[in-house]
Length: 101
Image (cartoon, rainbow, N blue to C red):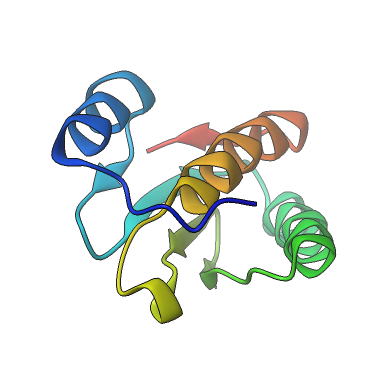
């Protein structure tokens, strides 16, 4: 669980390859789901992962879409931990029928 801040190169690669909005302050992505319960299931699974890792995203749940924002406030921005959890978020979204917006 690394609190190392991501470099500009790291952020550019994440945005280009991963599709996340990547800034020094945060990583953010919106996912679309076919049904509201699919989105709720994804949010629940993500909450359990976040609790296990003791690192919690901001989550906005709406009908058919979920926006997830990762940031490490005590490190003052985006860290390696946020990047790891963004990748895990992508995997969870796929398992719950979500697609990146």
